[in-house]
Image (cartoon, rainbow, N blue to C red; front, side):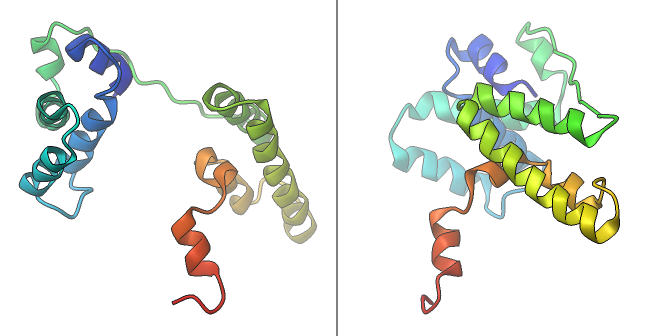
Length: 160
């Protein structure tokens, strides 16, 4: 789902894109809460409540009835994926995405992390295409960004 494009088509701006995705995630069963709870939280947030509720509901509708996009007179975009022939191609593509997402330094940080794991995988397994190296290539934002604040706390000694 191209949530940003869909949000722009439905609501005139990209801001409701995350709510569209939240609705889709809910409809796929990925959220351990009820729709009523999500909608109550949206209301409590107080920011763009009608638009956010509509986007959440649209996200659910699109999963439940993929033809809903046609009802909105929005031509569907094909979903494309990249299957690389080599690890280097996949890393280059991810680095390009990270540069667009944040900046070149962010992408280089990611590239260095993959390179370090590749060196270890090559020493241990004899080749860089070790599954752990492939796994490191996805999702890049989690690896490049490092641990979250809650993860830092969890990993800190003496913090419970």
